[in-house]
Each structure stands twice: as C-alpha cells, then as structure tokens.
Image (tube, rainbow over all chains, first blue to last red; front, side, top):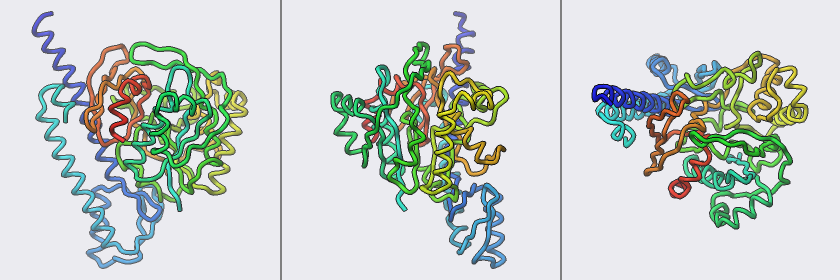
Amino acid sequence: MDQQLKQALDFANYQQTFSIQKKVLKERMSAKLTYGFNGGLFRIDRTLLTFVDMLCAKDRTSGVILLDANENPVLVDDLEEFRDEIFRRYFEVTNEYFEQHQKIKKSRSVEKLISQ
Amino acid sequence: MTQGILLYAHNNRTVDYALMSVIAGGLAKKNLQVPVSLITDASTIAWMKESNIFNQAETVFDHIIVVDRPTTDNQRRLHDGQTGQMIPFINTNRSTAYDLTPYDRTLLIDSDFFILSNSLGEYWNVDADVMLGSAINDIYDDSRVGYLDRHVSDTGVKMYWATTVMFSKNANAKLFFDTVNYVKENYSQFADVFRFDCRQFRNDIAFSVAKHILDGYQQDDVLSLPPVLSALDKDILHGVNGNTLTFLVDHKLTNSYCAAAISNIDIHIMNKQSVIRNKQALLELI
C-alpha cells in the first residue's frame, strides 16, 4: 500500500478512536453531574450553580423550592448545604474532566488513547 | 426502605446467562453498594453447579429465586462480531419482577448490563414509581442507531429500553407491570395497534407500550433513567485491563473496526460471547 494512503488510514483510525474516547468521557462527566436530591433530580450546570448562589446571596436559604431537571418542584430545606454540595461535585467533576481531556489530547496513538 | 438490584438468567444452549448474571450482579453490588437478587430456573442452577460458579453466585446474590423456566419459542439473531447465529431467547417473564422482587425499590437490569459506576445510585430516591432507560446511547455515535431503535415501529411510539428499569413496590408500579403482562399476553393484537413486528417478543416493546398507555397515550419523557450506553453485538469486547474495558467497534457496521476503551461508566454489552471469552478478567473485577 502506498505509504501516504497508509498514513491517512492510520490517522482515520486514530480519529475514530479519539472521537469515541471524547464522547465516552463526556457521557461519564454528564452522569456524574446528575444529582438526586429529596425526590428530585438535578443537573448540575452553570445555570443551577448561579441561581442557587444568587438565592444564597439574597439570604433565601431555608425552605426554598427549586425546579429540578424535569421541572418538578423540590423543597430544599437548607440551600447553603445544597449549594456547597453542588459546587463540590461540579469542581470535582470538571477537574477530572480537564485531566482526562488533557490525557486524551496528548495521546498520539490508538494504543495510548485506549490505555488512558 | 430496602433497595436492591434484580436480574433474570435463563440459560440456553448457546449463551451462559447465569455466568453473565454473576458478573453483572457482582459489578452492580460493588459499585452501587446494594444487595442483588437473581431470578432463575432449576436447569440454570444445575448448570451453575456443573460449571462451578454456583458458589460465587451465592456470594453475589442475597436471594436466588427459583421460578419455572418460561416456555417460549422466541428466537433472535445474535452476532459475535462478524459472525451470527439464531438463538433461543428466554426472556418472557420480566413482568413478574414486581411480584418477585424482595425490595421496596428495585433496579431491574439485564444480565448484559454492566454497572461500572455509581451514577444510577442518584435515582433511588427520585419521586417516580417506574422509570425506564430513556433511549439507546450507542458507544460510537447516533449514526448506528436506527429509527426502530428509537421507536417500536415505523409509525409507532417511542421506544424505551427495558435494559434498566427502576420501580417502587406500590400500586402504580403494580399496575404498570400488570399492563406489561397484558401487552405480552396479547402481543399480536397490540402489534396490530402499534404496528410493531410481533414475530419476536421484545421486553423493550412491551414496556414501551405499557408506559405509553399508562401515560395517557402520549409521550412523556419526564422521569426516565439515563440513556443506555451500548456496544452493539457486532462490536467485540476485546479485553479487560484493570478497570478498563477495551472494545473493537464496528463503526460503520461493515466489519471495519476501530478501538475504544471505557472505564467508570455503565455499559450494555450486546455481544454476549465476547463477555464470556473475558469471563475471568470480568469476574476479577467484582
């Protein structure tokens, strides 16, 4: 086989694996950012973090009703505790995401990609 | 309130579902930290004893519930990478899960669904009586997912995936499972209404139709379990290295493979024979 074509095919294989690894990593992080609380299910994202932090800043910290990912109302007795938990989870997950993403980006072969 | 996981295993001459259920049950117990029970039949237990996995099964499962082996002529084509064969598929008693589960809140999983994370643990206390896997999530991408993976038929309703089902022991969940059973027993009539192929019984279809009926004949995506990350049966579980499972993924379904690896994420591995080939390494994970 022509060397140039072989290189192109090798690169194509690499790209396929690279795409899968990125997708799986994203799925994993997304799952970790799902938070079940008091019968509701929250997706920890920037909107939730900002909204909850804003409510805390306005001293709305007890007996707060939040809408969860399914738009169902959920009672949060202690919003500061809830805020601390979602911030903790968010940073834990995004830090892991960053580390794993860096590893994938730096892996220049299929073997290295699947050994991460 | 007791929480636990429930699996079914009825062996056929080709696929060792008993072994797979020990692996799936062991991984679920380890990663979700809840008890696991197995529903099986006498002949499958006899095979477990003969193949020396019964002792391990007794350590994995808190309850081994023996039921009559369902009689069915259900067949399906299962691939092992490029090769495939028709095999009997003994799966028609899922609707008994409500009556047989020893738990107040149950996560019912297929024996080829491997729980490698604690993500589903977030769903135990969600205020929903029954939740199904909301869709298939192909390990490669959506290009391999067809319309009939998302809908029960060309003109039918949305397909949910009964690979994962979480339910509570209450009247609403009982009604749901009674409806699943009713759909199963009148499968060809419902096939006329919902326009699906009735030649092979599929739990995914029976559960989806039951959900559609009980949701008031409308689609209601609210309160489902996450999409089921799946490696198709044309993909091959190539190896297990520590916590990492490596796959050969037939990315265009034309026998052209690329590599992939996953860890710390739950996965539905449809290529059962490739699971069996890696049994030793998988058993070491539990």
